[in-house]
Every structure is written in structure tokens, then in C-alpha cells.
Image 1: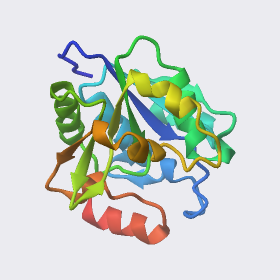
Image 2: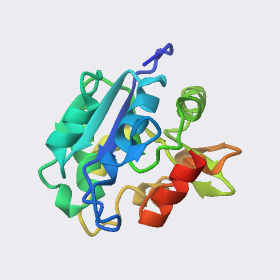
Image 3: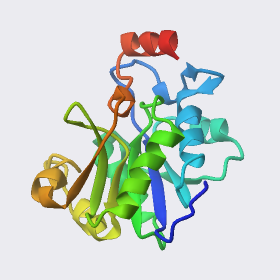
Image 4: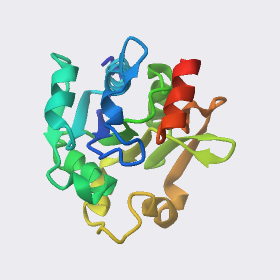
Length: 201
């Protein structure tokens, strides 16, 4: 964590899911020299976040053990089986004094510290309240929100459509950061995704 700006930004990693499409906890699958969750957390720790919050649920104990002594705040989401929105809300509720927060997904190990910092730098420089990377006109991660959007996300219900509903509601307040790589889009949902990722990593 190498934050040098006066804007305090927390990184929130959503790592509580059931991995139903994978058939086993993808957070703990081997990737590179560690696991998927460790790869993503290490990229977040290497970026300009002031703190890294990891929201856990399914296999929480194993994930926490895997992360070892890394300087992260572990937050348990008791409602993880109800979907990703509940994990975003649990992470936001754990925020302290940050000016903004970024949401990241545990199944996107291709997102590097450099890519994260590019979005952070763009967010700090823009007057917009939301910043996110865009590749070929598709929205990627991380998505950074000004703290004022916390209440909007906390107010969302299960049938709301999730955090992406804010993109429609506050479209004029979004700064798109154009990137030249699909790493900000790629995730690992199925076994084929994982096997392809291992070949390319």
C-alpha cells in the first residue's frame, strides 16, 4: 500500500462467494506461485490503497489462513449465500475514514497493481464521483466510488440489480478510464476459464 495522495481510498475485495459454477472454492485454487485470492490481494496491497478490506464468507477460515499475516482487514459476511451485493455492503460498513472506496472481485487475478493505480490516479484527478476502467467500451474493475455513494449501495435490496444500478442512475458522474488490455474484464467463472488462465499466466 503506497498511497501518496491526500485522497484516502480503501480497496474492498469481494471474496465471499460460493463458486457454484466452478464447483469448488475458486478463491483457493492454485494460481502462479500462490492462490487466486492471494494473487488479487497482493496486487491490491501493491497499489495505492490506504487499506485493503477482504470480505469473506464461504470457506472463510481457509481463506483467512491462506492470507496469513498480510496487512488486510478481514470482514465476515454472514449473508454471503444471498449474493455479491451483500458482500459489497459488508465491506462498505467496515469503512472508517476513507474518502472513497474501490470494489474488486476475487476472480480477476489478471488485474495488476499498475492497472489499479491507473484507475486510482484518474479518480484523484477527476471531478467525477465514480471512476472505472473501460476496454472496448466495456466496464471493468476496479470501480472507485466517492464515499457519498456508500448510502446508495447500502440501501440496495436483493431485487435491485446490484451495484451496477448506480451506473444508470449516476451516469453523468462516471469517469471512464480507457485501458489497452482486457485484464480489467477477465474473470474466472468456469473450469475452462481457470484452465485457460493457468496457460496464459
